[in-house]
Length: 619
Image (cartoon, rainbow, N blue to C red; front, side, top):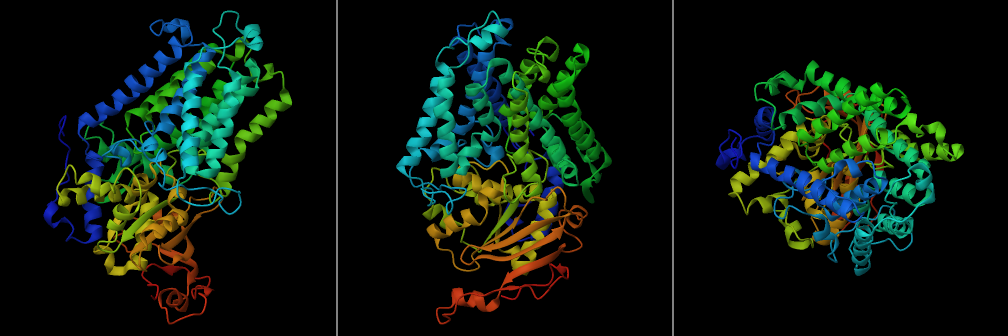
């Protein structure tokens, strides 16, 4: 793999699609194990320039110069509260513009590399309200001039808050004698309101702004006196860390490590197979992968933050800071898909600012709060969505649930009858085309098909992939070899500008929005969709969606059945417990104009038995 040349899989592109689907998956999975996505090194350089020059360099310059500080004199500003505030606001601006996470080729944006503002400043693009039937004035799935104006106001509000100088704060002056003020808290009030209204109109933009982490910080900026603000910010970052650490308990996270390490550009090729049990023949995670995941990952993300929050020992605190910095820079260096690189850089700075700039032994321990019960309420509020999201993942996005990169995601695979995918390019308003269509501007069609299959191979290496492909065998049978299969996370990115791995952004609501635009026939567009695993259960729920018919089947499967299988399912599909399926007569009622009775829903004939995916649903 050179500076400008990718490492292409060892297949003949012209005959690749003639091979059985799982033969393609096995070949490309083995290639991923050694080379990852095979991206040219120039791509990683572009990402590094974006993070360190644009995000870091421009952000520091803006924050310091607009606050009366010299960006070259780091000792002057690293622990200035206004710099931390502006770093948060700059991060939100970068994310909501679409230049942060979920940007570029590693998130499925090839041409153009930016989604975000190119979509959200354009009327008639897809909008996904979270509760359109419950919240007034949020119905509809098309972006209106009001939505565009609302989004533009958020951008302006963020920009103004970043460039205006700080204002005096009596609570800050009491704690820090020599300071450059704080961001005017008055600017936070309209920003908070605008983000909440936007979240009710379009959950995609709300999540793209990473509101689950940065909106609480804005609330703290606007409402709390200085010392309590610092303590609340400490609780916020610790909640994010520990929530992520707890979410990694279970089977899923070990499966995340091997494909992530395989995609790491600095990792020697000879070491990558060590993260698999028996490379190429057994692609399940090795003990080394489990150790990296649950020792360097889970333990560090829980123990390190607790030390930082409560330690009054300087040496121990510095050691914990170094540990957390190492974790974030390690994650950044792996270039994970969805590429949350800016987030890792911000958290690295936040670790130093909060726990060394304002340490517990210098009047910034939790016991130094002026509002003990208020701090208890903040802890409860910060823990609410992580607790609810782990118990009821169907109610909460995995981002507010703090399950970032835990491997326990809602996921989907899309299956199009030959030619049906082209309807998306024809009928959906957006500034970009389908991911494959974007690739056609750079590669021949056969090469583009191989690249698209690399994403499917990546998904197969995670627990969800085995379940998704088992579902598609159940519903497509041998047609799986001729249908066009797509990794839904990347397809969703091309349709709504952002995904970041959240399957809730491409559930039946998005499919219904696409159906209203494209009018797929029954069987033209089939979706296998699975929900995250609740923390207290050993099963995951699934849905099968036909774009023309809606949800046609629901059920569950055991996580261990998916985890124990190989990516290419050599033993056949995993078994499912079918809870409900759309009756054959009901399907006819939808598709046959001669049948006028309403569709009927019924419990599966399987009752309580476990149904093998080889048992085909009668169409």
